[in-house]
Image (cartoon, rainbow, N blue to C red):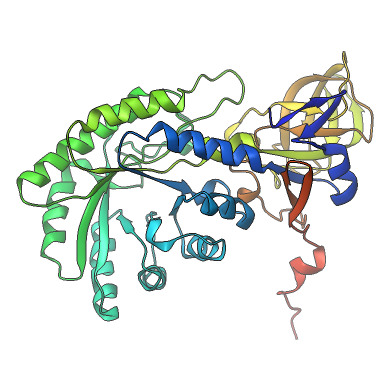
Length: 412
């Protein structure tokens, strides 16, 4: 385990979390470099028998140090904004392994990605395809494109992170995709390279992935019959992790299910894992400020809040909460933050033996944690630390209120 107890004290690899809190304060995100490295290596190895490209989904955790770990391992990247492209390049990522997804790409973002020489644009509407053709023409280049097809498959996940249903804003409706490929073939400044889909996040069953890929491959075969050659098929991302009692498939099971569907097709398989690589690799470290006893509930008020970790408030997501100093027994607490919203909680009904000043670790917070944080209530965002064996490296300084106000001005 990359986060575990040693002599009754919770560690990140070989570093006590207590020492990180003392040195860098709380709230603080702490990541394990070994956890990131081992997750990527295991995922990549699962697909070793087929031509493939792993493109880490930057939106899951876009910290420069996290991206740099994956870049050093040879990962590609799936981005959804020009800002994410700049982060990937700053972290040493190879633009030739970058996919640009997202429904709202601006002309400026297209120009930036074309100049960088990215691998492919995952086009999500006819308007985007036509705009990309115009932008590429003005730049005197040809844009590589793949259509993100919406296969209409129910991923059986939280509705906010289901992206492959017919009512979703994402992708090209399946019945419209063939006609749009024909249109793309006629355009002078786009080159068709692939086809793909992405049906949602935190999926814990193989069946929806297979159903979506089958539909996409049916369309790929029809394109091939019409002389529209493809070089890759993008199966998207969304493989879930265990937060509480979920049973997501092992990487090997997931890989076998997808590669079997490809059969003898000579298509590179592109994957976009995010949470599956980063989720278990981070924790949010918080300190108990107050213990508040109530007639119906007891509250542990900590210094981390919904602005630091949005998932519980947004999705009613469950994260394990562990005391940094192990104790047995205790009473049931609501773990809440100081933000002035009733929805500001990190965990419900957790039995813990607590005292004011204790440290808590909110587990499995490496994905969709810091990257979704905000400054609500004028709260500076947390520090971030990466642990590598026995060394702790500060990878993002804690913000200050002065920094938050630096770009604002009073009226004259």
